[in-house]
Image (cartoon, rainbow over all chains, first blue to last red; front, side, top):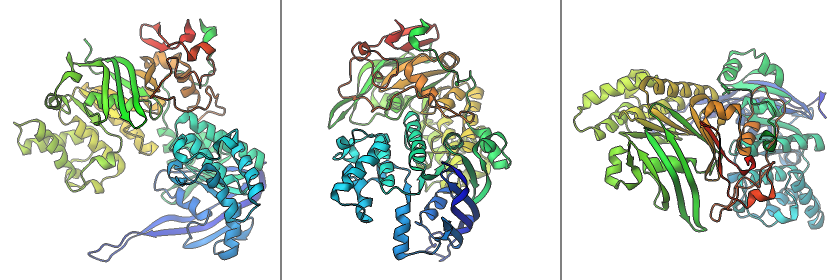
Length: 283
Length: 318
């Protein structure tokens, strides 16, 4: 489980800028600082929540860690090894260990691939197993995300499935290589509340069963509080606060975190935590 | 006399798979100055209701049953020309994607003045711009920003401008369709306050459509919970939140994440949205319900009055 002594991912003074499109009249372009010397670490086996509003740099952080982006300066370490500038074979090996779940399951799955093809694709790319053993690995992966019996889903296509099912497929695809570390970028923002909880439960189960470490990116402090061990709050490209999830909520230090908590929707009426008596006992 | 009475409204869409019954037998009433929240998952029919009220249903939609009485006129019986007299002047709408609702090549203030000029032939351009200025005050945009273009506005300011546009012809009813869904929490909070504010000040009736049950609890006097095209629970906000009756309402509340929640009671099973082309005669939630019995999927559920201001559509009460 969670091991507070082993750092799995470490970011040291990561600096990243994006250049905006040049103006065709003046030739001028602007530099936007997406991440300003961001440093934090993620411990083995934990779920680390990265919370921030749109444009805060949370997705850029996630993309940097899976090496879909390269920082301008700063260092990125996985298991203590500097991976900031790896390429070729080392990069391919890295991709086997680190996976990503994207925000929108309507866009992240190839509509022309069946579930089996989508989930087995990473195995083929990384040359894992043969056609027989792959079938079992896909089965396993579908089972852990709660799609059973798995064989019933093999030949379905994305358009035949609901948003929740599609996101499960995307998770199964990320998990099939048994990665050490997974970045989940707002995996439930396109889904309804009740479905989102099921997805959270799956992520939580995966962490327990397979000892995967997660970076969970979200704009919802409540979701981070529910799922994560520790939370980092990012604002305008700077990490303003990190700490245990409960501490961040109960005792926020930074004014931005405090404002986030104040603005969170609340129920004016009655506590909704109470357990309701079943209907048939009520009358 | 209620300002708006919707009686037994049923709306469907012609699709390749057949006639999709998007809204079925929905009834509710709204008094002047009152606010009603419609809550439900995506695809439950809440936006279809909003579009029916505005007379803005797409070509492939058809109203199969029911009446929409607004100030004693049935909106469904009006011609296209007649409904244009009602739309925006009497019933206005705040759309979901504020960023796309403004014309990028016109100044924001002028766009809103244009709406005023289009609906009031007697007003001068100057007077219209004067009105926009006071509307900007109501929604909290500095008047000097009137001459700016949409791209110079932040997301929250665009949404405020859209609210100003909805208020521009002094409607008696505003339909707000997920007005804060694309916004960050802090901006959402500001917009919700702006909506509550104008509603109090101007005594306008409001239908607030959202998938976020806490937001509706914050803004509205009464609430309708929708599932698969039907209203399943309806009543005063306080009654519904104090004693939620329908199993679906309970599952919504149970799965709502708050900042102090450790454990979530999963009061529903994962399931697919029911087939709305050939809906079951029984309860549409029965498949995902944790307290349903075999009879639930066969017998048509009936409304049960829990109090004069609270009712639920569930056969488990009998």
